[in-house]
Length: 238
Image (tube, rainbow, N blue to C red; front, side):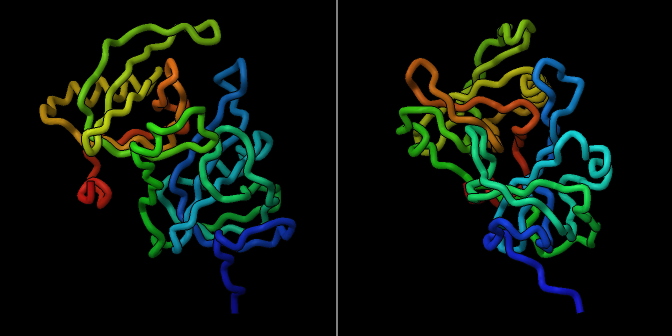
């Protein structure tokens, strides 16, 4: 008989022989500093059947071993990880710890399970608007797209990238969100599709930043995902 799976909520160091059953909610590659064509790591957000999330990191030496076997949205059995403290100013989950893939980590695809297909941690506008400093955790927000600003060019790290500021509204509160690069292209593609009413937008894994003393959002390159009018229960509830 197979050993039971470990709930994500109970994952603590130092034991490596963890056995989890999860869905990959989000997967992205972090480019190396100074060379966007070379990956530095692959990041995953994993969720279990209890809707508990944890971040996992695949370091660059092992990306080739796992990348083709991990698809966003699919379910897996996984075992053997290093468990380390979840630190830094771009933490993607509230879990105290995160997982590090090892050479002996095993990943096995399993049929679609009861594990949630979506699991957002929606952050209230009111809480964001009361913040007086940058936030260490990435957040998910939902709101109506009520205003699209003028597209501009922005110089960053010696490169020129596109930038646009949009406004999201919820319960008479407004939140600014700065989009850069490929996220401007995604916005333009949606607007060009001919949708005319105020769409519902979910911004997943955004960074809370202060703009001239006022809190707002900005995308995190590769990590953030934007949904326009998604067919999800969160939109119906909103």
